[in-house]
Length: 66
Image (tube, rainbow, N blue to C red):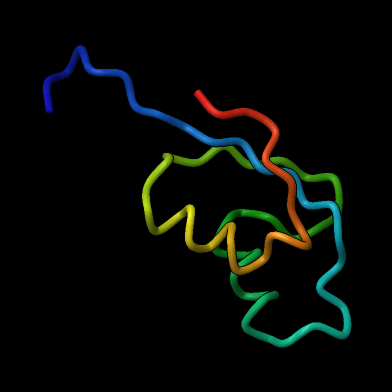
């Protein structure tokens, strides 16, 4: 990958609370850089990040995909 290549990103916002959810889901939110409702995090768009988003899809929403 060259320096001039643009890195694809995805911005997610937490819309649900991890209260009364399995501990794994709370840890996944923390791994995404989220820990409170309405917080946003911009991450590199990789298969690992997409998998994490899929695991907590009911707690987050995808805002922007670049």
